[in-house]
Image (cartoon, rainbow, N blue to C red):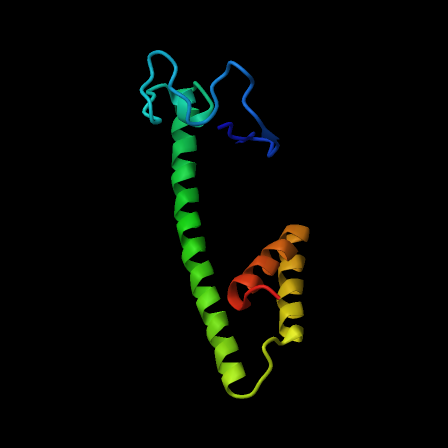
Length: 129
């Protein structure tokens, strides 16, 4: 199976024929499973100080990702509770003005990506339309 690779520029590429892609066996001198002792194997740079900084930054990114996942799940649960409560009291399934408000808040803060993120958040809380 061939895997896509996201370059630092954000573009997606495929490993070239004859060159290992993600998950491939480690090169000679390196251990399989990402235990290659060379800094460039994990960080993309052979410079030790830069590699160490990249590892530190990635640790913080991983912490942020964990927090985002937890917040996403909490937001979805709360949004679902709002919907259940509203419908149980004879209200509507959706309040479109509220959805537009959320979309605009995210669009204003993050641009087009914010709109897409808000749409995903809304769907996670209320389900697909």
